[in-house]
Length: 98
Image (cartoon, rainbow, N blue to C red; front, side, top):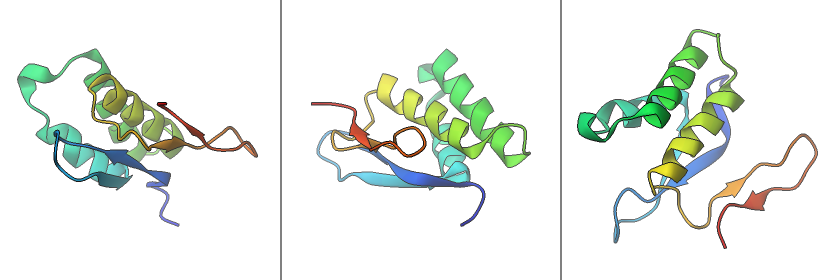
């Protein structure tokens, strides 16, 4: 497995009525974050961008970059309703929303 690939793809719904997309790794997440409108960027976007960029230069773990990207997606209302979050080592995956 590529070191920058997420353990579980992050499932997002970019806009109401559009199909769910899957973000498979750090580089794809960075592309998504770079395309995000400047007027809608904020601290959570910045944290996700920095974490993903940090992962590309081995300063941040891919797992932490994934968590930061998921937090951005959740706060921005992009996270798909069926997105499952991997549990802590050996734990079960759990849903984010009911």
